[in-house]
Image (cartoon, rainbow, N blue to C red):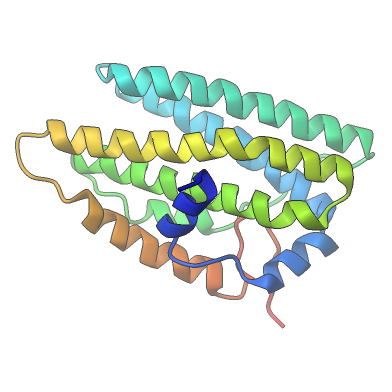
Length: 206
């Protein structure tokens, strides 16, 4: 099974065609919000490194992830600068915030939930890069295709870490049950129409 096949099997739904159409009509916003997403992904990884210093596997994987996300950020803003796209402030989509509302308040479920949410976000990002690439100009298409391998690995790292944290706990933790909870909310966020286009928004309101 390829990385994209594995991600497709993990995600609760496919990105609606209407979102792809909106992305093609809003490529400046797409790149600006993509840059914001890369910054946020790096910040999430760093926050986990500061909070869970005893988790060596997590530290190694999140350190690499943060470096890669910041490198992606640098690549996105270089494209924006080349295309004379002003880096303006954009309100964030409610996607990640809505997923965070499901995060437990007690450990180790809090960490497991954050990792499960991270796996979903990375999987969705990878799926959207793959779906967008065939419709974009050569430069942007090549860039998005170049991100697929690392984004797929980030998805795998988050999911693997969630299962490792659960396995190390003294009491049984059903990671699949938590994935089901987060996946259902993720599906709603991806399929429900949104007033504003963002990288992780649903299709536009007609």
